[in-house]
Amino acid sequence: MRVLVTGASGLLGAATANAIAIRGHEIVVFQRRASGLPFDEVRGDILDGEALTRALFGIDGVVHLAAKVSITGSRSEFESVNVEGTRQLLQSAKAAGVRSFVHVSSPSVAHDGMPIIGAGALPANPQTARGVYAVTKAQAELLALAEDEPDFAVVAIRPHLVWGPGDEQLIGRIIARARVGRLFLIDHGVALIDTTYVDNAASALAAAVERVAEPTVHGRAFVVTNGEPRTVAELLTEITRAAGLPAPKRSVPFGAAYRAGQLAERAWGSRGAEPPLTRFLVEQLATAHWFDQRQTCAALAWAPDVSLATGFERLTKWYQRG
Image (cartoon, rainbow, N blue to C red; front, side, top):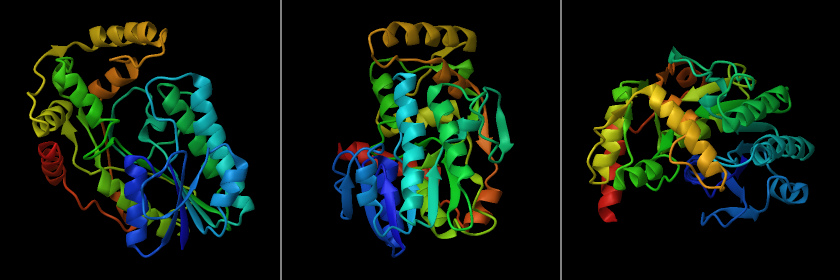
């Protein structure tokens, strides 16, 4: 197959392009800046129909990772990239004769603030999703799945808290806070959560490319994780240890942390800066969310290859190399 990967300049995008190529498929990558990857590349904006037409020429399948992933930004920015960008890509892909579409979503599209304990992929719901990122990703997932049809198979894959060496979205933020003494636990960090090592997320997306047209796959959403839930305290201990930093010891009650997040959003948001804490982040660190992977593994004929222990070993070596 000839597969287009959008958002390939990011950690997961690059890993996914490589994982699909290893399976013998031809790759084209599409993003705004140079990816540095050894594949055919088209650079452009996800809202640029002309650039998308060039990128989609001769393409059999699409993996759509391009998105605005941030804890700051206006609603219009998130809607423009995550919703309208997805709409534009879907329309352009169908017009170009693309046969399959793997939409990369997020478990946050179905998180309403309550614990998720051993669930599968719950329905995406923009009305109850927490925060503008989750809301717009929920809208985008619903748009994508609504286009599923016999000649255009669509699946939504929701990798959960993807991390690995070089990650700035999760690992980078944790380490930055730890280095200045601003990393703390909420309610002692006892919430049990799932995460996903980047290579596992990439191999799941590569499997989805090949399985998307299967009757048990297309038109559905699947959560992808390592299948190894850990407490927040355990995860933060392993991450900080990998960087040679002490684990967080201070714990803050949920109510106090939530109010602090609300104040920080207002104070930092007024000057366009990223707040050190948000209400969404507080909920994520204090609420259990881990998932049953059996349907995902069966439908995609996939299983995670890299354990958390091995992932943390790789992260430690990466920091040691400096």
